[in-house]
Image 1 (cartoon, one colour):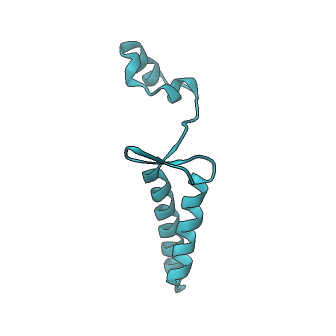
Image 2 (cartoon, one colour; image 1 turned 90 degrees about the horizontal axis):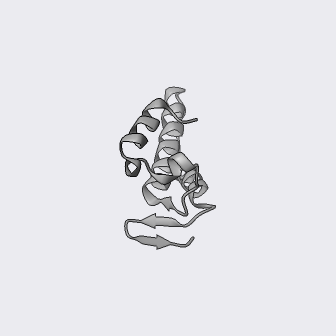
Length: 88
């Protein structure tokens, strides 16, 4: 679904809106920051949820959670590090 704001921005300047947004195209790569961020957010959520319930969390468990979630992002497409595309 496209919002009024997206249509308005497109009518004012078509180049302001990224092509995937209004054409619903999938990018050919995953930005490294997105993969890293997904892993960090998931690991932090597990850690803080366990701490809130009074459970101790082992470092290996948090690291494993980070690895699983960051790998979900890069499983289908190559990573993009700045100006470098890395095949996984």
